[in-house]
Length: 86
Ligand SMILES: [Zn+2]
Image 1 (cartoon, rainbow, N blue to C red):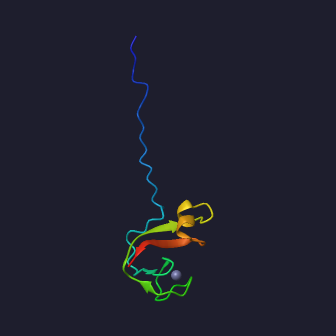
Image 2: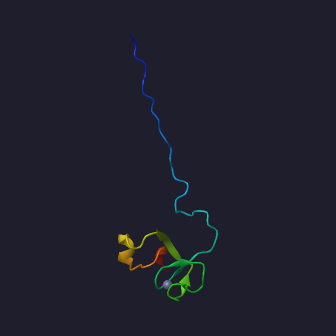
Image 3: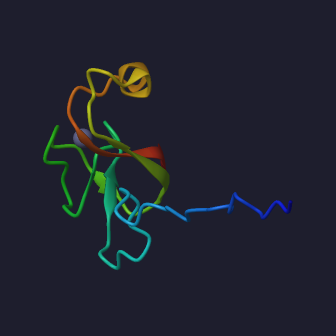
């Protein structure tokens, strides 16, 4: 009796292509110096603060009520927020 390889390894490369990361976004984004909210406006639509092009990294808050980071940063709305604004 001969045993054939019954099992085939199946690897799925299931990388989600619909994640929230927008790497190729050519729009000039600006982050609020006051609340870190990211928009394309000169003044923050959230708090009316001044925005800056000089920011590093951002996080996307999709559910601020469940996000510990959002709580820590005092974020009370969903949206994009810069991690560091200069
Ligand atoms: Zn703001």
